Length: 309
Figure 1 (cartoon, rainbow, N blue to C red):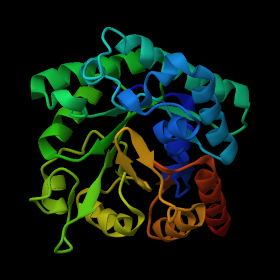
Figure 2 (cartoon, helix red, strand yellow):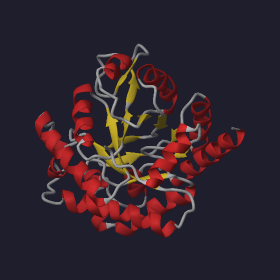
Figure 3 (cartoon, rainbow, N blue to C red):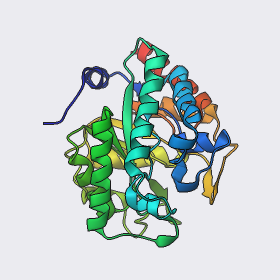
Figure 4 (cartoon, one colour):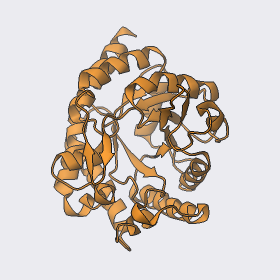
């Protein structure tokens, strides 16, 4: 039996009744935009720049987010070790959860606010390369348990971009006993075919069919460029009949920095969201490159859609 708190049930009940929810934007890229480092996926900021991380969460809440994500992308023992960081996984994950919770409490918002425990594949390991599935399962399950114990409302498994790795990630997340949301990252090949980001040799629909989605509460298209969101959502609908969401990105990672895309404006994201909501999407947000201004624009679109019924 998965643990679902009252606030979580309220948000999911609204979604089930045809309502909407707003996610936050890119935590790591906001850390970088405010002068921090993206090294080790910005996880050190939880200890070294706590005021910055807390302020980012606060700004996303003020912009209208119903869900804020912990700054824990790639915060596993294996991923951190690739950057020479050892024995700090639990410290950094717990610090990240505490900062998100503090921002939520200080906001004093009347609406329910959820804290999502962010997870992703350990294949992001810097120069050391990939790891075996058994190692990855151990590392991800450890992070999932830490996030759950620290008090997140649910787990958000991000950047599912390869079938075998996605299976490992989702299985590891399931061990924590919390609801799981999952996001798939998609690209278009030279022939115009959609595929998972790291599975370019297989059509997106075939890849998704080989992943067990039955344990999810929500499925997303995320870290995908705005023009590719609609067709990717259409494919996801072929294999998933539960709540749908999306949170696209803008820009690209040019190690060690994030290159922001001037064309990824709040207005562009809002215009996309109008289409996605009209087409059945229930939860929208932003990924890398999305600022509080982007989330404020999404809040406006969601509120207008809610008023229109």
